[in-house]
Image (tube, rainbow, N blue to C red; front, side, top):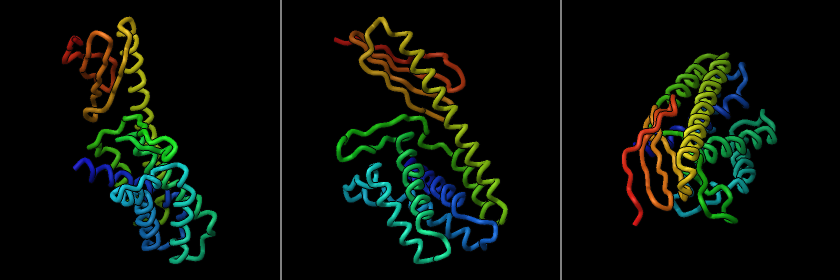
Length: 230
């Protein structure tokens, strides 16, 4: 279920980006719908090649290449949008709709093949239906209402502010943990979302391993386990 939600998040972010850049008020409902579907598919596409062991489409070095390929394909269906605009749109769709979302979620090797390590700033909970609901509602209005761009912009702004709030909360928690255990020489500090309203964390020092949780909306720290290192 987590994978389905995560894939849907890629799709909705990609659909939102493509709609905001390409769509115009005089486009028909079917054209608006096609733009969203195509943009969503572009954002999901890197995971298709990943099933075959390919990580190139998750790399920032390949963003412009994939964006150009999708721009050329899109031009087969409509000729009234310049290639450069489509190239920019779908490059941004891959970069934000997939690579950035993975970075905020389960991690991504965006420097592949030079660095094969996955990087992450994990703030998006795997079952975060709040983001899904906001973007899905905004895009639904955008499909059926010719002047719906303002609603999609509003939806994107809400999600952006929400993610910024989560990022700020995560940084605050990590700083609080560093301050609390700085005398014990921290070897590892991990924080990640356990639910929509709660962080989980692990702190490993030379002598003790701690794990616990903290609410997203405040910095109160609760220790669940404490194990001394042999």
